[in-house]
Image (cartoon, rainbow, N blue to C red; front, side, top):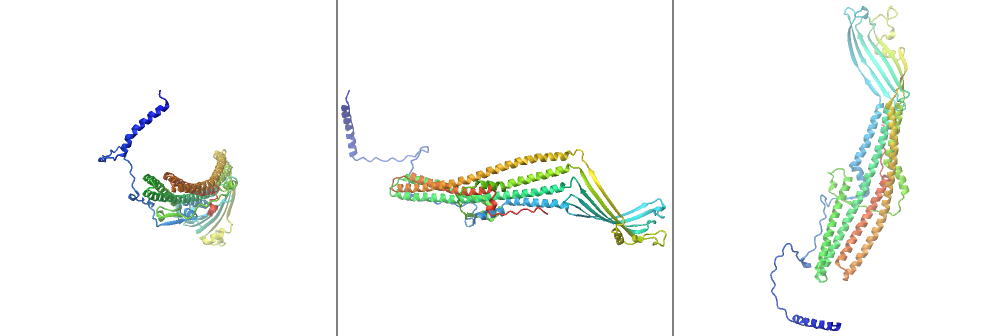
Length: 572
C-alpha cells in the first residue's frame, strides 16, 4: 500500500500532464467557426427571455382613472352636515316613514269624527185617500177622506266622549190639509220638539269601543313617531358610514396613485442605471412587474371609490333622474380623532332612556293596558239611563164659529198659522216626560272573559319582550363602545406601523443607493409602506364610523347632529 506522500506525488504528476496541453490550447488563437442559422424554436419549448435596453423601451402611460357615467367637470363638494341634511330631505325611506306618521294622524282624526254632531233632515209629502164607512169619519157624499201632509223633520244628534252618553234633538213639523167634513182645523200645523238622552252607568261608561279605538290610535301614533325616529337615526348612521367610506376610498385611491408614481420613478432610476451598466436588465423586469401590480391595486381603488360614491348618492338623492348622479362627490371633512375614553355607564343610561325600540314597546304595553280596561268593562252588566222630553204645538185655520158664540168651537190659541203652532210648542203646555233604565245582564259573557284572559297573556309576553330588547340594547351599546376603544388603539398602532415603514424605506433606500441592497428589497419596503398607509387610513375611517355607530346605539344621533323631530299632533 502506498503511503500518503507517494499518493500526493502521483496525483500532482497526473494533474501536471493534463494541464500542459490545456495551457497550450489556451495560448493558441482560436479558429473562427461558422455560426449556423437559428432553427425554429418549437412552441412547447420555453424561449429565453430578452431584456431590451433603456433606449428601446418607454415609460408605461399613466392609467385612465375616469369612471363610467361621471363627468369630471361636475364636482359636488359635500360636508358631513350637508350629507345628513340631504339624506333627511331626499331619502325615500325617510319619506315613507314620515308619511306613516301622517297617515296615523289622519286615522286618529277620523276616529274623532265619531263625536262630530250629525244633522239630518227628511222632507216628505204624503197624500192619502182613504175610504170611510161611517158618516162620523167626515167622508161626506164621496165616501172617502183625502189627507195631504207636508213634513219637514230636522234632527241633531251627538255622542259625548266623556261618559259615553248620547243625545238626539228631533224637531218634527207637519202641515196637513183634508177634505174631511168633521175637521175643525183645515189646514192645520203640528210641531213637536223631542230631546232624547242615553247615559251608560256601568258598561261603556268609562270606556267603550270608540274611545278604546281612539286611545289605542294615540299610542299607535306615538309608535309610528318612534319608528320614524328610529328610521331617521338609522339613515343618519348609514349616511355617516357611507360618507366616511367615500373619504377612505378617495384617500386610498390617492395612496395607491402615490405608490404607482413611486414605482414609475423607480423605473426611471433603473433605466438610468442599466444605461450606465450599474444594473442588470432583470431589475427592470422586477420594476415593471411591480408597476403592473400597483396599477391593478389602483384600478381596484377606483372601483371602491365608485361603489362608495354610488352608495352615498342612493342615500342623498331622491330619484334616478337627478343630475348629481353624474357628479363627482368630494368630501370636505376629514376624520377627527378624539382619544378620550368612552363613558360606558353614561352611554348605557342614555340608550336605555332614549332608544326608540324601548319607547315603542312601552307604548305597546300601554295599549295592552287599554285592552285590559276595555275588555274588563265589557264584562260588566249594561245599565243605561234613558230620558225623553217632548213638547208639542198645534195651530190651523178654523172652519167652525169662534168661541164663545158657538156651542162647538175651537180655542183661540189654536187658530193661526205655522208661527202660532211653534209658539204653542214652546209654552210646554202639552208635553211628555219619561225616564227609564235599560238593563242587560249577560249570563256567561264568554267573549269578554276570553278577551280579558288573552290580554293578560299578552301582558306577560310584552314584559318578556321588553326585557329581551333591553338586553339586546345593552349588548349593542357595549359592542359599540368596544369598537370605539378598539378603533382608537388601531389608529395608534397603524400610525406607529406607518412611521416604522417610512423609516425602513428610508434606510433601505440609502442601502440601495450605495449598492448594499437589491431592487427586490427596495420594492418590498415600498409595498410595505403603501400597505401601512392604507391601514392607517382604514383605522381612522373605522374610528369615525365607530363613533357614528355608538351614537346610533345610544340614540344620541339626533342630539349630536342637531336634528329636531317634531312630535305628531294627537288632537283633531
